[in-house]
Image 1 (cartoon, helix red, strand yellow):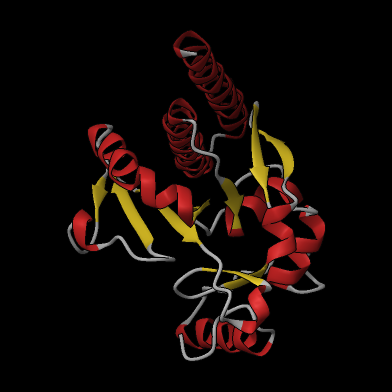
Image 2: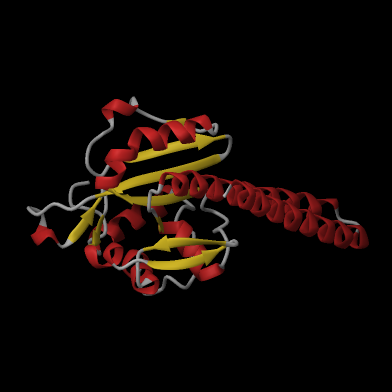
Length: 231
């Protein structure tokens, strides 16, 4: 496992170096330092995102913890085959019954890998549907526990502290190959993306251009029943 992970990291590094070399040649021909600097930082961001995703996958796979790639990370992976340029947060869902058992181990392993947990102490965050935010340099990870409640809407949802997903998506996962690795996602993926983002999910839209755009997005999520009432 460890050897194969190093191979993945090496492939990422080599591909990034090759891209930089190609852009350097292009910029030299066109005598444009600006183009190179723009592309360089774009490429190094891609490498950080690749590294971040594989770090989490390796840690969780070692523990035998099944998880779902979801939200913007899944949207970019499925629609574009790449990261969404304005979305620096990678989201994962874990069944809450598993998350509760592995909570301390997951947080400790990620902290040992250089991540910092934002918010309350670990022992105070063990409640259903909790979201854990972890940071390392410019990297951001969100891990959410998703749970069921027989007394909520006839038990038809998997819940977080903010969102509600129809159970059928996480109960019928679909695999997706992304950046030389296989991830589990709520399935069918296209149905889930339409449920989460609406019928125009195939059209790239930056919802974070302003406070007004964010508020409009929240309102839409409430209207479509993705965000839980009053959350």
